[in-house]
Image (cartoon, rainbow, N blue to C red):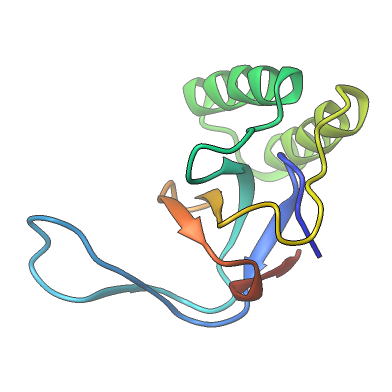
Amino acid sequence: MPYETGAKVRLTRDVRVTGEGSPGPLSLAEGLEGFVEGFTEGTSSGGVAQSALDEVERISRAAQLTGFSAAMMDQVRQQVTRHAGAYAPGAGDRAGYRVRFVNGFVLDGIDEDALTRA
């Protein structure tokens, strides 16, 4: 099932992360939650909804929210996505997702089969 921009997702398996200058293998653990920020490989990232979500992320990063405030920001993300008319891709339209995880890690190109709704 495709995920729209702003959807809260969870990893269904460990995802290996590789990169230049990394000291060794690194993996993100199964169960780690995050939010879909867009799509990879030059595809549409949600237009108006993406701009609004970028602003929500900027504000929430500056405030360093916890507890009730963090939960409230999760609801704001979902509402922005719902009300801004985010583009929901069809099956096979996207190569991968850009996800910002709750630990601050951002990963591009995550396959749909590595994600589930949180």
